[in-house]
Image (cartoon, rainbow, N blue to C red; front, side, top):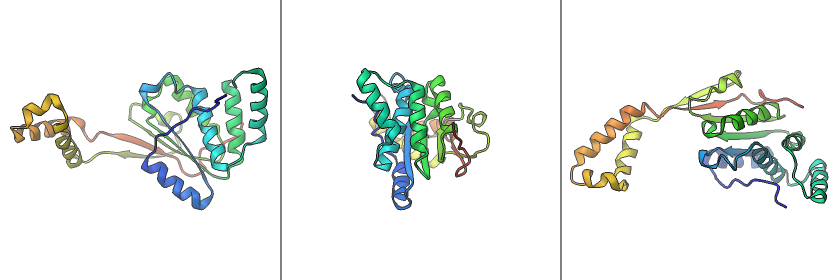
Length: 212
């Protein structure tokens, strides 16, 4: 019986955190939201994924999880959402320090996003890094946080677009013989993008924590 939803995506941030955690004994968990996976990224699956990652970090199964597994295996059932939350919180209390990265909150289904944010607010010993486009009002959920707005430089955007144009078959026939047209497209898109703003919400260590 498979209990956990696996996440295989990696990022520079996660790799860096895991390298640091290996030296300090901290734990790292992450969620990458994707609008294409809304039916899979349910609150229960996401919380169970967090639990799985924490268990792997510690390298041992807690008594609460072992007992729940036996009970549900006997009944051929799965834990409810509230049970997953209780199990995740019980496991979190065994970790002295945790880093949790939640990426692309704006791509989550609104109800799922609100539920997960509420779960994370109540999880003990956690330091959160949340990323989202400005459309999501994260300040309403977590007002006492450090906020960093990240804007791509115009020159970086221009270089990306110029490099991407030869790979766009619908545009290639127009720009391959006229370099100035490709540059014009790059400049126009860069002006319209206005930096491709991404908001990163970084809470101060230990600031968002609590208990059941």
